[in-house]
Image (cartoon, rainbow, N blue to C red):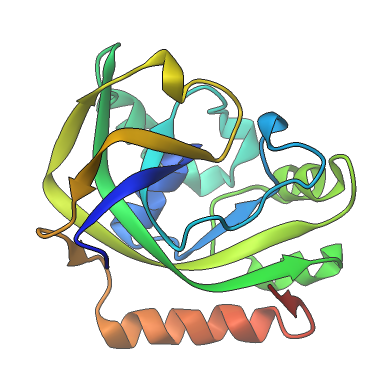
Length: 193
């Protein structure tokens, strides 16, 4: 991990919490409205996770995500405040052109089948799956929120690089490797990007 990171990756707060708790080791991404016709690209391999609350919807997640949604909502920072507690390093990137491959990832993430299908078919068919090694810091780093961070896009640049010296991996090396291999096996036939 770099000594400091200035880029952040926006995702639902409940997904960030799932990554932080070790419940999830992958990110599925289509891309934000502001990413243009080219869509999402893995512009950075290491980044802070930027939790968003704008699109949170229980209907977009599997049923057993309900307790985590309540937990995230109970710990939501006050308006005007951004809390960074999780950083990620991308180990693998897959570009999916076949929706049926998504079934192999069942149980490895919190998104509902309907949400993934909608994302897959939005604009043009396809999705990216990123396997990420997740690290956490305690306590969270608090930054002022800014209109600069607004908008439906994946990447935002932080006002300053935030040090990563106190990060600890969420999963032990062996557990992460087991999950990485399971995801790779589920995505056999998908194009590695």
